[in-house]
Length: 586
Image 1 (tube, rainbow, N blue to C red):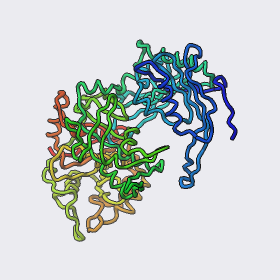
Image 2: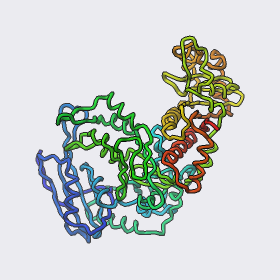
Image 3: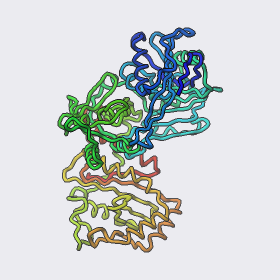
Image 4: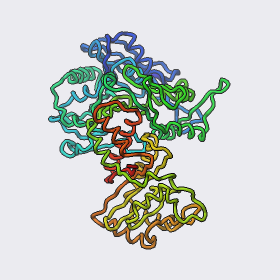
């Protein structure tokens, strides 16, 4: 391949830039570090096609490099095949402490930017347009949801969302991306990465300079209408949060971690006798299971329940510090990095504080606009059941001669609660939608019940995390069709519970179920209720702790995690047109 040298004037780049500020004047060393980071994936077999350092152009300083980068061809991972791609980085300094990065196919520069500079913040980016004079055409949000099995994101699109989008639950939604039309200009704005993409033809460097200057000028404006975005969760600095709150617990997004590892074919490695060894799938599964718990954080930032785990409080960010996470490695472009760094870089953990207003998620702090007002809604969803006080197990001892679940078991008590429903099915084990599915034809209600028993009374978030995760995961199944339910009846509900003589159809005649379900699905009164039955939870105890939250009094870390977990469950149910409820002890 013959490399043809380029001039700065030859470049035609897209107006897709990341806007950055520096706490001090930008110098030669800053430029070199940025270019060095971008060249981390450079193909050393070829010389750069263009190298410019801080050239004065139209009142700005421009640095640029064009080079060939090398990327592994993932379709043949064991044969060392690589793609060679022409890449560029253009740095436009529009002021002593402001610069824009335009890049294509470079190595990531984000860790360097996050560590040493200030990427344009949420409010800065919103200042670049006026809500009242613009059409908000697209919006993607990240839910303030601590359940990694729940709805994590939503996307909306319309000619103008201001006229079509309900602000319901916006207070706990974090805007991540928006597309805005102002007159003839259309811009895509990534609100959490400081990036703006103007949808236009490629331009020369001189026009990129003018555009960068205009954007930075717009960012400095303060009298801008933000009525549409003002109802969403507000991004706040970690420094501001720590003035009135302290980290109380951390929850790793285990499902997102596992999903990312599988989708990108990423292996974990460990060292033994000075050599790297690949972690076996079974060992990986066991290790990830250890992350599926909410760890409380004490006043010294120690993770309670771990040997040496801590939460590191940095200047702008939080990060976990664990020997177990550091021992495992991920193979990077040039060297191995710790699994801990990989998790931190991708933001795969959530930190709650001793005030429920705040949540640290995806490497930023956010204030839930709904905040303490949600406490009453959560308490309303807790339905006390006196019989739960005498529950001694989840399903009791099931033997080959059993014809019913033990009367003291949680399963039996759930069946007693729904004894007046038309049908009660036990769907536990196998491909299950819930532990129990009940149908009441008189009220046109379908209920899914997910049960969890613990020997000791506890308001622990971890006890609820798993069962609520399962409930959220199966919300889609609540909208079954007559055909899918018929399959359940014909393949499961007409049989006995595994290893027993317990009929899976606990009430009703399964032979009539298919016709009754067809009629139910056509009933305009049809509604759905999703229930989590937790015998270890006490409404009176939870009420006392949540009332302390409302008054702004300090509570333990697991209480704020409990608040967020139940809140996530409620909002996930509402988003799926289901009524949420938590059966618990009085």
